Length: 171
Image 1 (tube, rainbow, N blue to C red):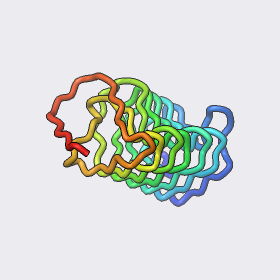
Image 2: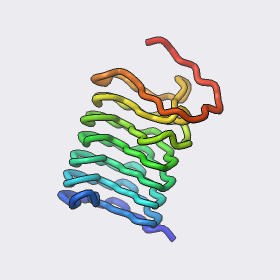
Image 3: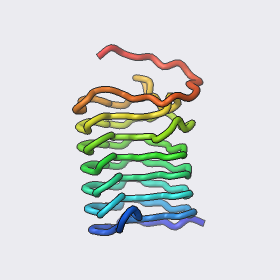
Image 4: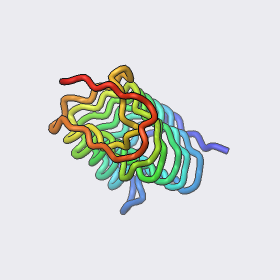
């Protein structure tokens, strides 16, 4: 069973490392929500499957979306002014069609070389750095991502298998 949140405003929430919205071993979905000004993470999923769709997640003290040990999806969201926009640990996350801007560190950050799909259709600009992702998540120019400008226009890669060809375009 899934718990579904629609048109919810979460403001000034969270405590310690718990996140404004915290899920442990559950299936949650967020649609058209705003999660802002939390004292730690905006959305924190731990051993959970989470869908975050058409949400505005901003001005949280830690990660905008933190996925830890769960396969999840983040789609069509605006994620800004957090420490990192999307932070992933031990998970496969589909990240597509988001605007991830103005975060203090990374737009998207993976802690390890998890096997995960490539990023698709995202605008990741105005962050300190755009990406730290596994090879499997490395987008091809045809995937429709905008990854610059950021303060440091570099992409950090974590080693794992790349099972497709990737074309790079000099910029």
